[in-house]
Amino acid sequence: MLAGDFFGFHKLFAKDESGATMVEMTISIVLLLVLTLGFVDFGNAFYQWNAANKAVQVGGRMAAISAPVAPEVITAGPTTTPGDPIPINAYNFVCTGGASCTGGGTYNAANFNRIFAGDDGNCGIVAGNRPGMCDFFPRLTPANVVISYQATGLGYQTRPGGPVPTITVRLQNVTFQFFFLGGLLGLSNLTMPSMISTVTGEDMKSVYP
Image (cartoon, rainbow, N blue to C red; front, top):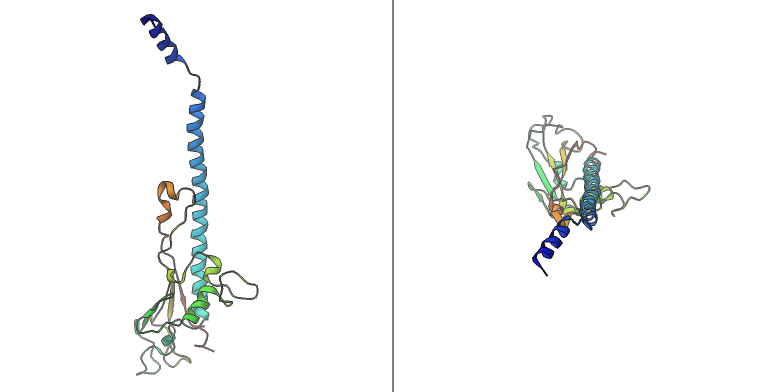
């Protein structure tokens, strides 16, 4: 090939735009696909957050009307001066699902399961049964749930059934699940923000008839 022919071919090749549309379309489709899947994943993440938040609210309500996970709550608080309010921090039982209770409390698995899974004891809403936490967020495990019963100055020692605890239900170690972008960006390991529900345990079953 002569030098003139080579340079002429090079100029023609440099000006040739055939296939450019295909390259541009490939880049655009990839970006559009990532963006679309991102919307789907973050929409699903919002659903998970909302479901977890609802589970915490339900857990607080169930804890307020159910027997305490730490049965010692029923008789907790000093009895030296009947009629006085229960002092703040006179007791503080912190119970982790499937494990134990701190603060001198014993862990009652049946009482925890009623809060976690509802009246029927299983995850999945059943008509005629009060739902539990996992009925609203099936991905929850007992280890994700922490329930505390604390004296915050409520209740009197002469009140039938004992003190009135402040009950806190919160989640721990719950992560978002990203189906499409988890492997690409590592988003499956993002931890959910802290969620807490605080209620007054004045209607706890087997405490106040």
